[in-house]
Every structure is written in C-alpha cells, then in structure tokens.
Length: 210
Ligand code: NAP
Image (tube, rainbow, N blue to C red; front, side):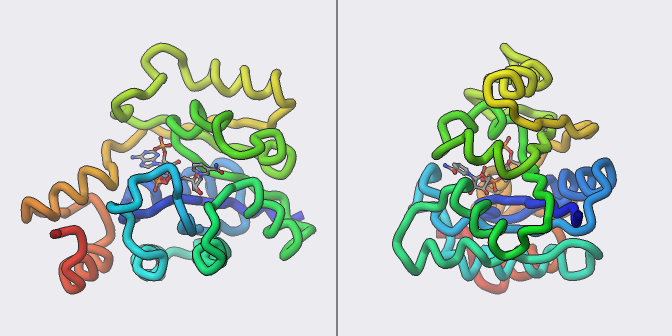
C-alpha cells in the first residue's frame, strides 16, 4: 500500500515550518509521497486576509519544486468553483476515490489537533486517515497547549474515536504565516522564513502590502 502524506494548509503564505513538518513526517513514517494541498475555502480564517487559491497554489508550487517526494494537489480548488466551504472529511473521501489503494496520513500542527473535534465530521476524518501531529515551538495565542500536552490530546482522540494519531518527533520551529505577512507589510527581511523563490514571488506580485 502506498503511504501518502497530506500537508493541508491555507498556506497564506507557505513557509519553512510547513516544509519542515512535512519532511519530518516523510522520514519518520516512511511516506512515499507528500501532497501539499492548499485549502480551497478556509472558512475558519478571516477571508479578507486570504489570497486567492491560484496565488496560494503558485507559491506552494514554487516552495516544493526542488523537493523530491513533494507534490502539489489542487483537489480543493473545486470547492472555490462550487462556492462551498472546504471540509477535510470531504477531501479525504475524494482522495480515496482517486487512489483507493493509498493509506493517507494527514499532517498537522498542535493547534489543529486541539481544534479537530470542531471540524466537520471528525469521526469520518479519523476513519479515512492517520493523523500525524507536530508541536510548535511558540504556540499561537489561545492555544490549549499550555494546559494540555499534545500527547494527552492524542490519547484522548484515540480513545474517543478509535483514531490513529501519532506524534511527530519534531522540535518545533517558530514561524507563522501571520508573522510573515506582518513582516512584508513592514518591509522587513523574510530570510530563513520561507523559500527564496516564494519570497521573490511575494515581492514581484506585491502581495500582502495592502
Ligand atoms: P495553515 O495555517 O496554513 O497551517 C497548516 C498547518 O501547518 C497547520 O496544521 C499548522 O498548525 C501547521 N503549522 C504552521 N506553522 C507551523 C510551525 N511553525 N510548526 C509546526 N506546524 C506548523 O493552515 P490551516 O488553515 O490551519 O489548515 C490546515 C488544514 O486543516 C487544511 O487542510 C484545512 O483545510 C484543514 N481544516 C479543515 C477544517 C474542516 O474540515 N472543518 C477546519 C479547519 C482546517 P497549527 O494548527 O498549529 O496552526
């Protein structure tokens, strides 16, 4: 069975934190491939801030172009065309149809592991993939990480949903898309935060400055 990782994200923009957890997942779980999947309509984010799917896909393609085993998936683009919110449970079902023989591993950060029960049909998500969760060095504000360790949350989900949840052995990396957008607005350097090709694209296309 092919082991396929899914690195889903708003990717507004994609950065080295996303690439690092995907790389770690690929190594630790011997994944044959990782699909980088920009979210079609990330309804939980402030829509005024989110760039069009085409722009986020273009940045994602640039970020992974020289990285073996990483591929762009545009499967969630159809949600935009249909004017519907993007739900991971639906996407996983579509992926199962595209490749019924694959075993899917959905890669996510700590905050998503605490929030996943509020997503659409979490039981269906757990039925169709293994979750690989990574810590973050600096937990975003309002994170529950301070009160509940990631391993405890993973165990809770395993018991409640018979979910397959694994923790990535990852030290964390202090980068966020929000900080990158702030830096662009202030004209600060993005060195080390995201691939140079993505930085050049952001500057050339005047993204995030308004
Ligand atoms: P994002 O902000 O672009 O982040 C993508 C992933 O990377 C998140 O899991 C995030 O973890 C993680 N990450 C970012 N920076 C990191 C760092 N420095 N270190 C470690 N991890 C880091 O995307 P998103 O909006 O959270 O969406 C993630 C996926 O969840 C997408 O596929 C989206 O469609 C899905 N989602 C589904 C539903 C639903 O089905 N109802 C609802 C919401 C999201 P954190 O979670 O810790 O930020």
